[in-house]
Length: 113
Length: 113
Image (cartoon, rainbow over the protein chains, first blue to last red):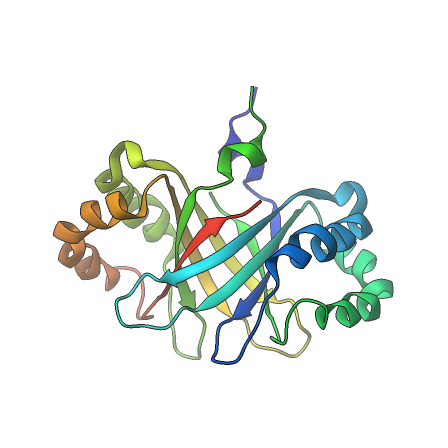
């Protein structure tokens, strides 16, 4: 039986990061119950899991909160992810207005450990 | 037996995020084998796990890589994390020069899912 770290090592993460700024809004309830499940459904068996974080604070005193929320898809293949998202990109973007007025930053990363 | 998602829900994540910019360097081998184990050892049983990501690309075409690396500590208690790090902060900062010239952004977040 593999342990949890070994399960994730080598996977690709696509992290959709919503920067905090004054006047920005984010509806976590909609994001968790509607938006993320919609996108996850496009990804099929390439999706290993997805996670959602709610930003709480900066870890550095007197610094603003860096991100209000981060949604992360753990996938086996980046090219399969891109192929699955491509035809659905407009539907995904159109749903943004239902939960946020933030333009996200998107990071593709590899799990080292 | 709990599943993986249930294990992490409600945990606090402290994510140390290293923004990419021209001229910035990051030694992943040192980070993985020396720096992160050193910090993890300060955290004791409050630490559930830690992860390391290597930034690969922006998920948005023609945008620069947002972060070169992210190290994340999953802890049960933020106040215990802060108590453990406080007396070791100077040792941790002094080690930065051994692997990077980047000033990190630090996000405290809560695992929603």
